[in-house]
Image 1 (cartoon, helix red, strand yellow):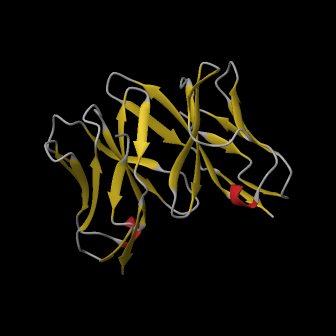
Image 2 (cartoon, rainbow over the protein chains, first blue to last red):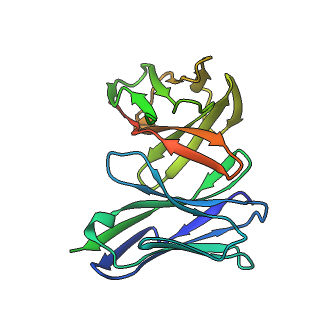
Length: 110
Length: 114
């Protein structure tokens, strides 16, 4: 019940394309869903986050879509750029507990 | 505000030795969590400290331990190192705000066990 399943493990997208990473959770008590971006040699950094009372949140080229009934949420990166190449982690939290997905390694082809 | 700092950034140890890693959280953050990151395994939670007390613990052997000081700085210790302990060790400081529980990661300590 505490798992967050993330897919795909790796993703290759052409420059200018849309990158989509999906996550699914089981515990309906989770109330906050952040995405983290990690570049090689760096720690993960908070990218964008959403609460379950909102179906979509957009910040620049990054959009989270949230489907509460399906217990799924996804990250969309529009107009993907080589600089977006990184590992992305989804997470779900409640109170002081946070569970991370296993990560998606995204590579944007120039 | 300064971010989370971790020292040292890189470390090479021999199997059987022990190691201590240090983490200084963001000023005002009282919670510090530690994670082990290895290729393909994602972020594996080690433990979390809040106000000098271990509040949550992951599924790691007792060789992994930690502590937190009164200034919220935290240390993590690994005794009797094994080759499989080679990993990036990440520290995250957090604050439980009205909005959410957000974690801010340091750059990590890359530990290599030979």
